Length: 181
Image (cartoon, rainbow, N blue to C red; front, side):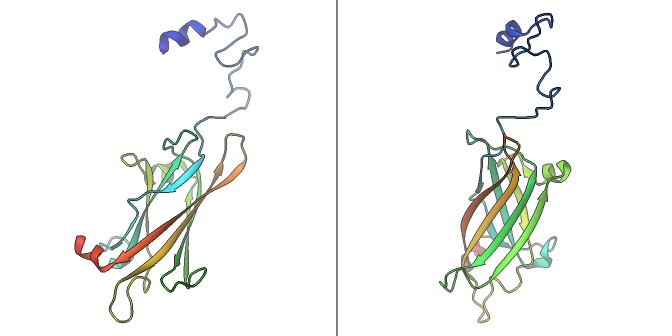
């Protein structure tokens, strides 16, 4: 592929550059910072789960270990600057809209924090959500229920416009999860 591109490059005397016919300025020089590999969709990765905390985050209580994959138009994982809004709804009672709701805003607009949250092995952002006291443990000592995670990612698309990408994920919590740990 490098050899093919080398044959297309100009010496600059013709005024043409690869991909920019009739201009001797690159896209960045003309103020265009457009990439075809911008976020097009998100998916809550199946590795997402509820676990008992290890004392490092959440003081040993429940945590949700959330994995969010951001993908380009071809379905390939990409990193992207933006912000997440994560909403947990209790659907155990079966009532429309759920009984309880928790919300976590996560800022991924700063490149350092964004990169630190990204797991290159899974191609997804890995985020631990704490503050779940009283959510998964019943008053009678039972554990579990059905919950919905809604994740909304606010970012910029290829046209430079703000977009909101969304995915919902059904999360089941049970006593069996504690035995697997």
